Amino acid sequence: MPKNTKTVVITGAGRGLGLELARIHARQGFRLALSDIDTESLKKVADAFQQVGTEVLALPCDVRRSEDVQKLLDHCVDRWGSLDRLINNAGVAVAGSIDAVPVEDWKWVLDINLMGVVHGCHAAARIMKSQGSGQIINIASLAGLLTLPGMSAYNASKAAVVSLSETLHAELAPWGIQVSVVCPSFFKTGLGRSLRCPDAGAASHLERLMQSSQLSASAIAEHIVQGVDHHELHILPHPQGAYWWRLKRLSPGLYDLLMRRVAHKQYQHQQRKNPK
Image 1: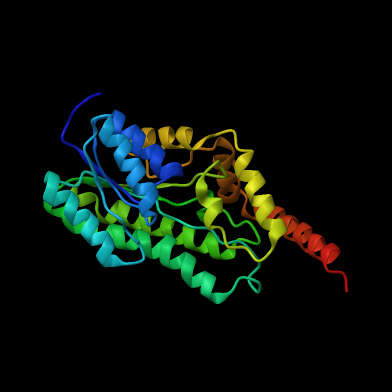
Image 2: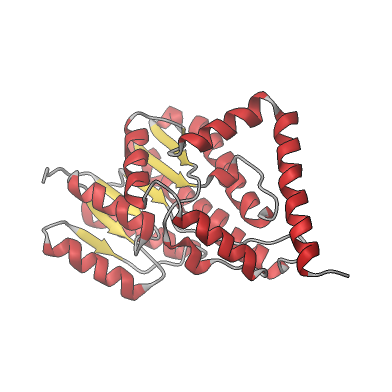
């Protein structure tokens, strides 16, 4: 295992994509500052890395709390002297029509998916500016680029992360800070555990889509690290996702027609389930 002095902070590192990203960085010799709201999973992960000789700092963190995120980054710098890479990975999912999803769930998903990333970027920018270097990787979703009906809350949270990342890509460049945003499609991850959805059928459908993906969390993590190493702004691990994004940009009218068809199918499904 290579040894160097680089450090990476990863939120939501207790399982899924965050854990796979930690594994790749450990193999590359990074010192790991890991966080998760699930303290039990976080401890198991940290212990496993320590047993193989990886330098690990594990700190429970609720990304909704700016002070938690600041504390995590400060601990990393206090212990190792620098913050080379921040991966804002923690996230949750909400599905359902605009009138079915409670406003409380909108606040919940925006608080974690958007403000959690804002808290990370806000704290990291100050540190990295003083260093004159650093990398920020924000995990968004293909939902941040596309507009699948029935996913308005989740789509909006991830679209905001894409916009934030594109803004910071230019804004922080003069300080030598690189920003990337990752937009994967469905893949096997632990996101379904946090899913809030008023329609059990829709929740089952989303879970099937995640389980049917040909790309694992490990493969997605490999794509991410490769994209970051090549200084890519938009990282789209799924070729099909990249195709749909190009279609939306090149033929917005056709894309809108296709999304209307999806919405109409969802309407017909609801009508069959709840006939008047």
